[in-house]
Structure formats: C-alpha cells, structure tokens
Image 1 (cartoon, helix red, strand yellow):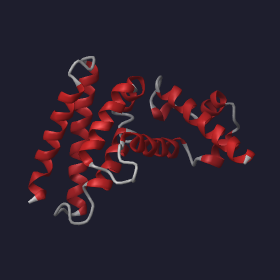
Image 2: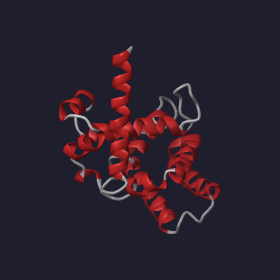
Image 3: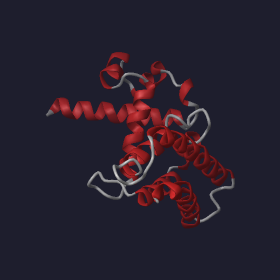
Length: 181
C-alpha cells in the first residue's frame, strides 16, 4: 500500500513538473534533468515511470482526453469530446496556449485529436473510409483545428465557447459528410 502511495505521489510530481515547464517552453526544450530537478526525483525514477519526455506527453494527452470525455464508460461521443476539449482548453489556457503552438501540436493537440478520431470516427461501420484517407483527413483536421484554436487564443477567447463549438462541429461535419453516405 505504501509503495502505491509513493508511486502515485511520484507520478503526480512528474506530471505537475511537466505542466509547469510546458507553460514556459516548447516540449523539445524540456530536458529530463530539469524535470527531475523540479519534481525532486532522480533520472532513474523518471525512467521507472516513462520512456522519455514524449512518452510522458502522450500519457498526459490520454489523461486529458479522459478528462474531456463526459462519458465514463470509455466510449467517446465525438461532439461531446470536441466540446469537452474546448472547455478544457478554456479552463487551462496557460497550458493549452503552448499546446497549440506548431512545435507542440503533434505532442498534445495532435495526439488528443488522433485519440478522439480513433475512438469515434474509425469505429467499424461508422464511415466508409480507408486508413490512408483517414490519415489525410486527420492531418487536415489537426491543421484546421489548430488554426481555429490559435486564432481563438490570439483574440483573447472572446468568441463564446458555445459559438466556437458550433463552428468546429459544423466544419467537422462538412469534412466527414462525404464519408457518412
């Protein structure tokens, strides 16, 4: 039991240290040495938990997606998750402003969208789409949604969240309309 508590505390220290660092710098500039220093752990302890910084970022992306998903059963409703993503982003602006930077897109924003895509759009029988087509569409969506969110942040999040959700939903529907028939 004590080991589980220590493990959980260490996980929390690593994650909170990473979040503190990502607020101030791009992911490729974060070193394990500086993360370990902030978390007050050894490099060995870090490697007992994660393969590298990107493995940590990937696991945090999954946690963020789970936090955005209002359905606790593990099944994702695309519209609900998109709305949850926007609400999460708005509530965590200092993190998400860095996450939508081009340098970080593939590690946070892209990962989260890809997880949403894999857990909603690619479910068997939902769309008539090949894996290759899906990859191109996903790249298109990531770039488009990154642009939408980047602009939203640059304008001080002035557009109400419900209006932003509507814009994103309508554009996603347009992208997938062809494949839903």
